[in-house]
Amino acid sequence: MINFKFSRLGFCENPQISTFIHTPRIVCGLRNGPRKPMWRKRVLSTEAIQAVQSLKLAHNSSKLEHVFSTKVCRLLKDDLLDTLAELQRQNELDLALKVFDFVRKEVWYAPDLSLFNQMIMMLGKNKMVEMAERLFVELRNEGLEPDTRTFTEMIGAYFKVEKVSKAMDTYELMKASGCDPDKLALTILIRNLEKAGEGTLSAVVKKECAKYFDYPQKFIEEVERKYPRRKSVVLL
Image (tube, rainbow, N blue to C red; front, side, top):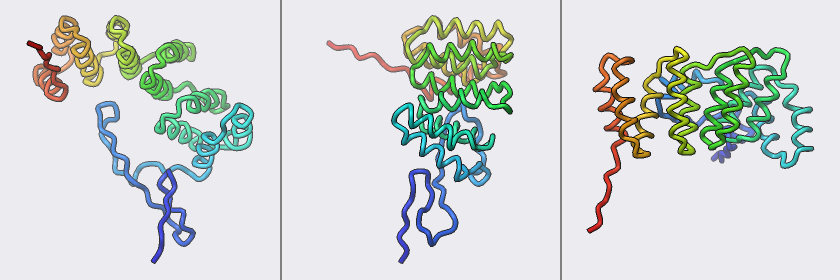
């Protein structure tokens, strides 16, 4: 009988087994879009796995510098980007930011809006709004222009820290910039405005859905069904 031992990344560590077993990770949500079959997903290379593990084990600045100079700097482009993506997946914010800055200094780096969008999403998730705002400015300094996804991530970040007016300002800026809000953006707006008790603003956003969808009422009903309003409790 063979005993199987699995690492945190899902690899079988038994030396008698030459292959690896990958545990599927199911993620649901509009942001991620349709899921591709798991076997088509890119698998982390040994070098990328070692880099992630070494970064997480480096508990001070000198050890981090050593990891960057001995492991991270030797990674090929795809492996380096995979390392960044894996740190984002594990919500290792500080390490992801350091690798993100490292990527932007590489000779092969070309301004990439998707990288900024992923980092802004991560920062918003962790309520680091000021840093997300900084990246929003920096992407423009690199010659990029925010798209619908960028504005949506900023809107979500503001709602995370209950800055409703900032979220609405960003929504207006999105439209003024020529970016049509998609279902994700409008869902985030409607859901969070109603959660914040901003029924009037929510009604305005719902009315504007007619500009972007053929069947706006159906979309609104789906949002309300998925995220029902909380009923207030009256104490007698």
